[in-house]
Length: 268
Ligand code: SF4
Image 1: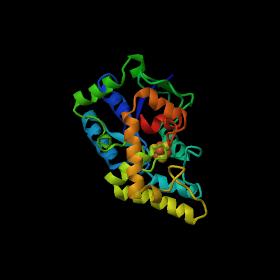
Image 2: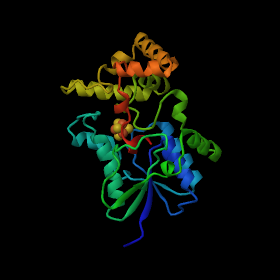
Image 3: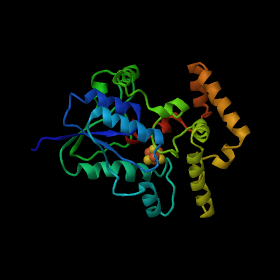
Image 4: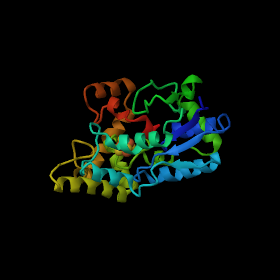
């Protein structure tokens, strides 16, 4: 039996970045990979560049042979945009490149799930030659520890948090809350326009697809609607935790928390 390879998938999120820093000296043979959709946030690319410099090891882009992985797969899927219920994006642009990169070698896959999160299945590989391990859970590290690891390393937290995006992933990710769309429009109007364009093309081709399901971006970007969404989000942020849970239970959130957990490989 050959010795296993050690692989850590980076998403551009804080937890996988902190795990890379945490394990840098403990697992010197670690291979770092990033499954680039070609439509990540500019802050994510910048953050990964800085992480690569800190690690002193290349972060391999597993989708480099495709100029624009998202466009490539969108064409193959007949123009059908991905959503929570047809999540080909994660499968084809994150999971499959990871499994292709691994091949049939025995692999230890390091996952940045924290001790204060419940273990969830969310789209990690189940290939028999890949064994997932959870060092933060084993060592009892919670969110505060992750923040400390990142701050002490000099890398800091992912910069998209500064303008109110809650996590990594494609700029058009359908897991975003509506207020994150508003913030995307404010921080990156060009990317908002690109996402809106996908909706327009889909409507022209006969399917009215909305990234946030219930409302087209052309509606959401109206100034009065943006103000309304921001006010609602602010009220929720300021509400006591118990009241917030009630709002969620009554269906007051635009995307259920359960569904927002999304895919480990995109967001950790
Ligand atoms: S970040 Fe969102 S849109 Fe992008 S691959 Fe992951 S689930 Fe799909």
